[in-house]
Length: 325
Image (cartoon, rainbow, N blue to C red; front, side, top):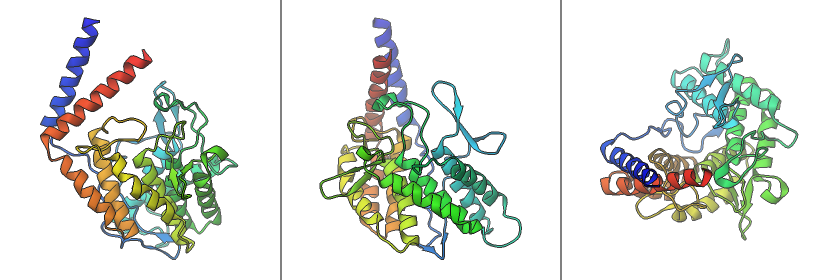
């Protein structure tokens, strides 16, 4: 028992020391090129976040589709990872000045996008989604679940596939993905509704609900792009619900990853929260999102707050490990 405590203490000290020493921040660049809210003529602009740094280590299989290794060691195609990579490649193509609709052979980034979009379209089930073949012990979720994050990201990929090819099936797939995303949890969907009828898209549908912030905002972006393309405003009630919930994610010194656990998020996820809120502010044209992001960003500039967050996160991780052992 003493050895276990010693190892746990060493782990906490190591994590805390790294948090204070390492002042580098994960890179999640916000798109400042595309005019806020621009989705015109069926042609979405750059994705709100430049996902290239996040997807730099993506692994492709023999069909050039992204694969992910599960905790069990099994390799599978994760719709979130596939979509993040596709959107990063689309951004790379636009950054190089190569528009998908410029005629002739699509540039490499667009071909990569269409490869991932093709797999998403072909593997989408009759409910409009992609079931995960892995469990999530943290939330008590068994294989076979749908993720609102996957649904929203895939919708964004499909819309860009539709813009690049004009194939209606991509638009249909996007609509199916969003419909399942907004379907209530108790009806087999991915959204938790409050008393005002506002949806919170659940990255990992669980009981009790987990309310994971980053997954919900990614889902919001996909919903917003499809809604605006169709001339609607279905995204507004989701945006209102998420905006109203932001205070619950604020620990006063750091942010929480979800609302089911009181533990602080990792540095990477905290920085992702800041970037997502800034991006949401541009997408929605609402200054309240970046106002919150500014407060959260200041947390990272305090060594004391970084230390406190690292220790809190370390204790949470160690507690999970003990519970599984």
